[in-house]
Amino acid sequence: MESLYLLEPGRVEVREVAIPPYKEDEILVKIAYCGICTLEKRLYTGERVIHYPLVGGHEASGIVAEVGSEVVPKIEKGARVALDLVNRCYACPACLKGNSNLCENRYNAKGKILGAFSDYIVVKAQQVFVVPPALPLEEAAFSEPLACCIRSLKRSNLKLGDTVLISGAGTMGLLHLKVARLMGLRAFVSDIDPARLQRVGQGALPISQCEQTLKKVTFNRGVEAVIVTTPAIEAVELATKVIADNGVILLYTSYNGESPYAFDLNAIHRKEVTITGSEGRSGEDFYRAVALLSHRSVQTDDLISHIYPLKEAPEAFEKALSGDSYRVLFKMGAL
Image (cartoon, rainbow, N blue to C red; front, top):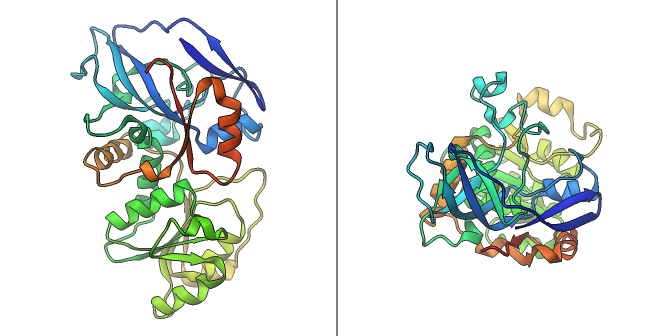
């Protein structure tokens, strides 16, 4: 099979390697599609380092190739699946407290890390989510990022009829928007790029109009939550200006290096605002994401910008990093 190895920042190589052996309690999956996530982009540029060499990829879908004899759930050979490729040891304090998304061993080099930029991958049964034939496998690959957005919205404590501002109209901002509308929320999306705002439709707000518009539509009360999906520090400053009393500012994005406080601390104090974050997703979040995609409540074909074979990996990464694309996917040769 072929696997894409990251050897150092900006340097990748497709290698022909043996199909990995699987144990009797494991499943061998033939990868169909895998997205280039923000994590993989940061690994490629060197902004984030786990170890080298590394096979990236975790937004994956595929077809079950082999099932070990000791696999308990009924998962049949040939099943179409979405894959949850985060490590969950189920033994550390985070896992035992029900916060497996924060598993202390999720990036432990002794375990399997990422790995879906390959023709095949070996996984445990709890990482496999069967999807129906009607769901295109390129859309099934969105299960992981969609699950992260579901967790984010859950942590925002929003209720039916609440108003939310989503800062950033990139892939993750638009996925948040799709789920927010399903939840019965009044959702607005801000961005500095007019072209990206065109994809939003109703609720699109240029940054320059955000504060005035949101105060008007909420009768000067502000929005119940702001979800920040862009690393632009100004987005947090804006959030403190439009958030309602007892509102939630959720930092979905991550920041490179040290991030200075970019907001009015008195606004947080006087409004009793909660500032929180959202990291990854739990198994339940993944299950919900697969369900929404499977019965087509959420469709993601409009978020696929380009699909590349592994051999065109440098071009794929450059396109993913260009700023004028949404999700860039790899299509594996073994499909």
